[in-house]
Image (tube, rainbow, N blue to C red):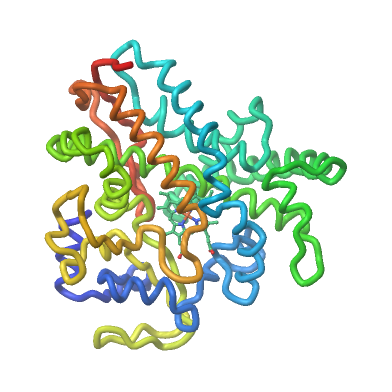
Length: 379
Ligand code: HEM
């Protein structure tokens, strides 16, 4: 999409798209403003009564502030640091399973299961139940990928409805268990949380659970997959990282900028908003194009270059302002562990020539759903 972003940004950073009467913002300052200025741009994009209407990410203050406080503490850098040994073990186990063959679909064998296992465990789901999580999460995401009104969308809606019922029944059981015997997990935190003196109801807990499940794995899956794509396309930068492993944190930030896992977020204007000489009328859907902002030449020197030592790198891949991603410390930790293992253990890395990698077909998330690679197994 990047040449298209560049073309559109240089023609006009704010664009009206008549077929869906939506507006798109492509420049760094404009996207940043749409993400943080909640007086002008609301995050309440789900109609009331719909499933996602309860979600933290789609709420505005004051409710947003209260919901965010419930889970924030579980995701601080210090809290997630405690997960490091477990994530390292999971990463090693996943690689041990396939590494000897010298080939794998990195998505199916590694980048999909790792974050999924981590978030399922944080939420408090028994290991044996975790295969179901993948199906649930896919159903939630498929619904948002499809074009409304299409046959595909109708099928996705049927699957989503079935999955929601299944999740609800499953969660009801877990909630009862946690009420009777609290544990040190996110579900217990949700069960015990109060907003304005009232406990969350079952729908609200379910909403949180769904949001954390979706937000907690597809994005990190894409970050790790995108990182490997960047290295496959830029072998010099991979060699640079092998020679200077201290560059890993900065390399991860550069992947976040260069191939942002979340390419766009929605907002709705609360009033007429003047921007770059145009006026976005009140009540309009707005797509803040994070992926385009992160390649704005006004902000980044030589933005089309993948440079693992880029400094400064004020990318907005995790958003900006009150909705800034609460999972950022967790994602960064998972990516650091994953990439240090992958770089250390997969020598002579190349894309498998007989089976091309496949991107996720979606406007707002970006990453490979299939990533067949070949390599020389390392230690
Ligand atoms: C919010 C990206 C990983 C949970 C956001 C936002 C972005 C983002 C752009 C802002 C949305 C907005 O302004 O409307 C990413 C990326 C990730 C990642 C690129 C990985 C590379 C995670 C993980 C979790 C998570 C691992 C949880 C376990 C959330 C939640 C919000 C959020 C709950 C909503 C926060 C709020 O509305 O206050 N994320 N995310 N994310 N993210 Fe992430």
